[in-house]
Picture 1 (cartoon, rainbow, N blue to C red):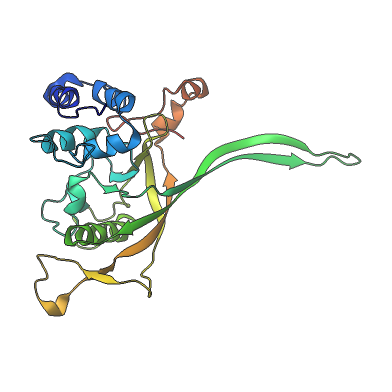
Picture 2 (cartoon, rainbow, N blue to C red):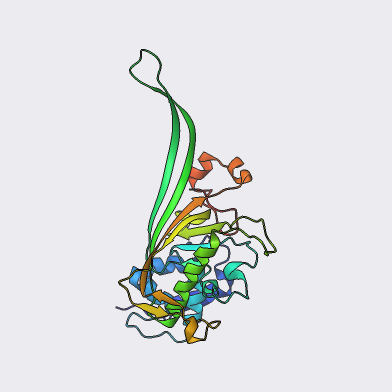
Length: 280
């Protein structure tokens, strides 16, 4: 028996939009729990698109679904910090990066490969006339977060979004300089999130490296940019391409000073957009 997405789920979505969700932890609010308990993974994807299981649109549901699931989306995202000023895609005058404003930063359309390097450093001393070294602990660190992601651009809107992703990454590792009002300010601190509140939850990080690949064996599609209506100024992106990112977690002295291993192990330091960001 098919579940009617236009009844119980839509009512819960409406309640959530009106404030029933409240301050629940992202992914643990009533709507998200109902969606996970009642629907399969494919059903959740359909409801996010405002579709029935048979592919029919749910009347009046698209705006509700967009509002609710955008705030409870557990896909991988790389965004500016919540308190960031009007820079990059938050700048209302930046038309090139404006597609990222709707998704709150880069929303990776396909599940990326994420590698996180953790290390503990020990200093070894080899006493004379002994068979074994003696080790003393020095420090622990989360070194690098590597993301290998794929993007496709088969429509004009996708091409515009993909170009915004590339241009954002070309900008996010640079400092403010020269004619900038914020000249002398280092590159912005970003937030990485994905896979639920106890996984990567608003991790503060800086972009230390990214590689863009423009393959020679792919078709290219034109990016419809309002600032470039002239055919002589065409901008093209591949219909399929990969990007590799290296992110370094970064925490303030105050955050580090208040770190507690016991609290971390209990999941109390996972962070949230309204706090200082999560520890790994």
